[in-house]
Image (cartoon, rainbow, N blue to C red; front, side):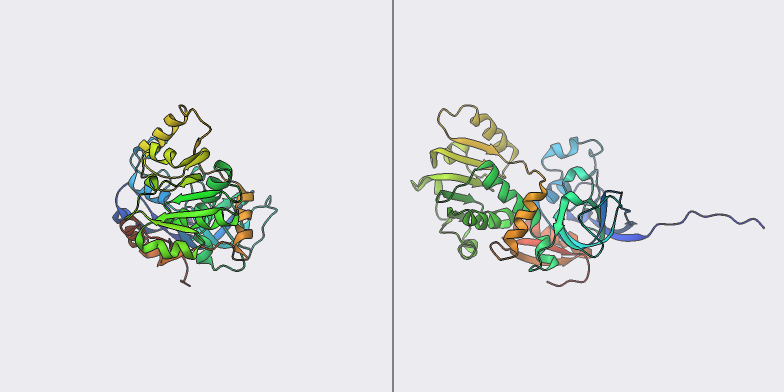
Length: 339
């Protein structure tokens, strides 16, 4: 008797797919193949992820150069968005040495990996993760990696922050800003936080020594000068920042429009004094993630969560993130929620 052989189907998992650029309405919950880790990778069962501005850029294809990457003209090359994650390891490749099945981990995936975290599982190199702080829930841990590392590298690596310096954080609410205030205090700086009226008390609670309501005051016209300015929101002309920067101070661009980034790069070539303009491009260093973990466990810094959404409601989470500009992180609960 002839028996037809059928190809064995792989195990399915749920993921949020972005089939084309557009509004959050294009996002779809679908079943996809469960990934299999390579010899130097781990398989992570994702418990929680979080939304970052990076995800919105890939969804909307703004700025336009997002489309210029190979295979990205009409839709994201990787249809699964998401960078931050927290979960536990289900399997490891035979070359993995740092982790074992059952380990609770957190981290983030650079866009160059071609993988996303708005899914039930993801494979990742062990250099992109570390053990989850025991004092944090999965939701809290998922709210940390990309924004905290951006704040750390902006202040320490680009800004060369020193104890006793006067540091201004423009855009002190939101993911990067909330961590920047806390990390600057860890380094012993005197911190001025610039944010909206509704976020002033939160900035104070995170350790800011001074707060400025940008809706009522323009910090560039107050006459105060700073050793270091971290511009998470680059909503002032470069000349205004330089006016309130000390002669040997540093201005670090961690956000803003492409036009502002180009302006910063151009201005930096023509500064005659010792002022420095640095443009931050996040680099993946596992040691930085370990440093962040060491600050999280004793409570020296903490994540601030705005709201949690189940995986199926990821489109609604993006609508909220885009419209409301939440002062805290928006978390996606992939498995049963614990927020």
